[in-house]
Image (cartoon, rainbow, N blue to C red; front, side, top):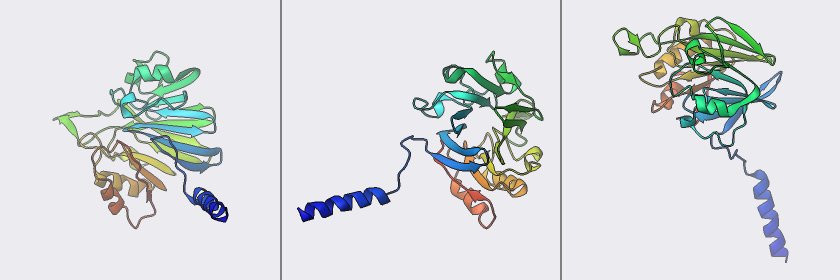
Length: 245
C-alpha cells in the first residue's frame, strides 16, 4: 500500500512540474501590453491571429496556410494584398461576424464588398486599436525585368498600436526605405521567402535600422532561419523562430 502511495505521489509531482503546451497545432506566444495580454497565433505562411482578451484579429487568413477549424471568428480582419496565398474570400466569409471590420488594400477590397480599403499612410482606429497602413513592395525581386512580384502602391503592411505596444506586420515586401523609417516597434513580423520577399541579409539590414525588440521571421518557406539568428547575434533584437510554413 505504501509503495502504491509513493508511486501515486511521483505521478502527481511529474504532472505538476512538466511544462504544458497548447494543443493548437499553430502554437502561440504571449506579449504583455498595457491593454492586456496579446496572444500571437502562428497559423502558417503569412497567416496570423492576434487575440486581446476576447477580441480576435485575423491577418491574411487563408485555408492553405493551416487549419482554422478551432480558431474563433474575427472581430477585425487585415489583408495585406490580393494574392491567393493572402486573400481567401470563402474563409473570410466564414470568419465574419455581423460586426466584423475588414481593412485591406484597394485591389483586395474589390473582391470583398464589405471591406474598407486603405492606402499607405492612412490610419484607422477600431476598438481602441490604431491601425496604420504602410507600404509593402519589391525593389529587387522581379518576375520579369521591370515587373516586381509586388509593385509599389498595391500591397500593404500594418502597424498596430495596442496599448503601449506597436506590432509591425510587414506583408510581402523587401527592406524598403519606409520600413527602415519606422519608429518604436516592439514586435515585428518580417517575411523571409525567396524569391518573393527578403533574404536573411535583407531582414537583418532592416531590423538593425528600425530595431524591433522582438523579431519573428514569417512567411519563410524553405529559407534557412538559422542565418537570421546568426546575423543578429550580439544585437539587442530577440529573434524568435516559430514553426511557420
